[in-house]
Length: 282
Image (cartoon, rainbow, N blue to C red; front, side, top):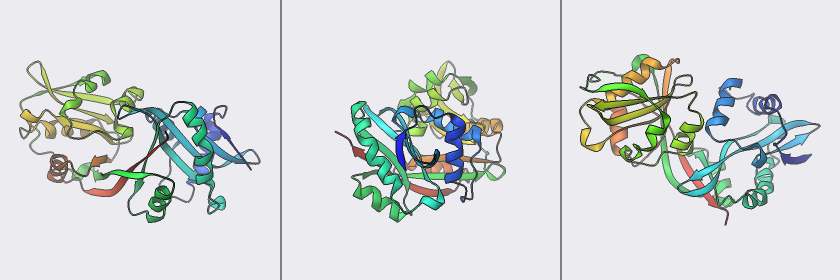
């Protein structure tokens, strides 16, 4: 068995390994969905690694790279092991193998998310030097069951560019997670739809969605314009553009009381809770 970089591995080979690792999972990952996910999360094949057996990928860690919190970072975009090879510590071995390469590339921290009820994984990451930096809540709801009443705010909603979101980040009550960051939205802007809510000429709210996955990456309203139905209007406009039956709002900071209250008022229930965990690499 050999651990090596994925720099010269074509996407079909990578996807076959990904598909094999998650073959026994209830959720199937389509090829275009995986391709889109990797683009949005900043997948860096040179700094991603896999264990190979007979030319086949049997375990992998797909790393995204970029700036996070002002620090050069790597992000666990996807980790998986083919069922027959589990229990051998391959993922931990791949991670250890990758550390010198990440450091050499100037990466100063490693970021990941893990379900809080996955106690073995949380314990493993703690032993590997990670610490939980915050709790993140994930919400999912069937579009037909979401309450869109109150979305008649006296504002204009129009499509905007991904770059316009960066200037409105101050509207957010919390820093978006890696996959929802402005950088991630910009990387995947060809797949995303960004909407701005305007009072006159001033943008007072915005949202960014992926219509193909039902993902609401960001939604925020300038604080002085809240409780006027603007967020509800944005959500209603976003739902009308979705090509899915369900919507998901992932990685909402557990301390963001206003966002939790808004989602509850729209009948979008919580689905899971994660830890964001970070390990310094200095």
